[in-house]
Image (cartoon, rainbow, N blue to C red; front, side, top):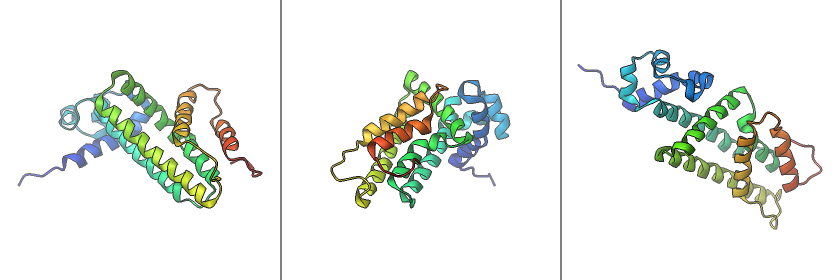
Length: 197
């Protein structure tokens, strides 16, 4: 009897086996040979499940984004102040070495999607932006409910998303203190007598 292979599961398993490889080498230095060896399959098998290297990277990036989204959704429910939630919303991509490695790969991914403009990547980036925008909106609405954000205080989710994007871009410059910049913004938006986050 023939063994039935779940193609989606096999595809995901190959991609997940290569996560560390991608984080170590980045997109441009990654080769199909390295991917096949790391996943324990032949090069031909790789092409049964993926069109090219970028397709594999896209699958891995999708898992990174799903993990990031889960952390952000957990943040919405966390029993901390709105100011702390906003700080962590912005700082999550910079909080540890693993997050910074994932961010570096994501920056490469964005560069490819912006210069080559493959429709699937652009659509995916827009969907991610919409998800993160909605999470940010939930945090702000909860802050209004608790009274931490006054009703007359207008805080634009779109402007905050642009700030987050700017942090990602500017963080590649060695002299950007991300935590400091986040605190400056949050203290302007939500001044208080509390210590900085």
